[in-house]
Image (cartoon, rainbow, N blue to C red):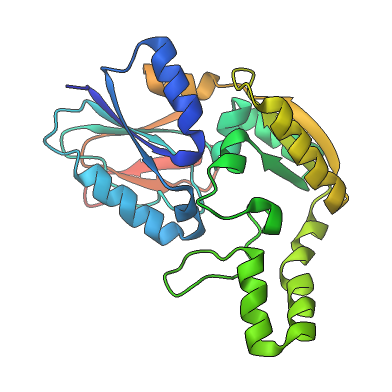
Length: 263
């Protein structure tokens, strides 16, 4: 039986599986992947993580690894299993993981805060939502009755039915396209082991051109993800929550801290 459980966002599935294979950890890590769309609803992501972490109790894992960051507070309040530890990187989201450290992300953010980030996972694991139609991360409030985010064509059809053709075009321009003004550059996080990176790079460049953004490509650094998988959990870069402790946001450079049972 695997000695550790990994709960990861689907967006990093390819990188996770490649690293597990390269390090020969296939028999030591039991990996599960959560759909990317849960990030649109942090409370649902929190509930799903809580359910899956709870299911790990009594399974003999010595650690439950979370390939998540703070993610809009979606991990806040999670409890470590009573018989195991909860381990996750000290990051706000997966961009820092792709870049190899929170420090590198903060430097890039300081240099150009208006950056829209793309990776293989963002482009190809978007739960059926066409990122080209609305932009990954562009939350314009279009969801169906089940809470599924609508694509721009679906949202336009809804607006045409409710408000007419002319009003629908105006609403799409204001509610959907206006988010692009908040950004100045598109960065493709290029993973050297991915054979389709050239095609993805061109796709992101075209999207940047249409949006009036600068285009850049930056190499992916998987050192933080590899450290999580291999157990190299330095206290500066990883939060280790002890059995029965609760994970909370520290609201400082540490990002996380733990509260004891009853705390």
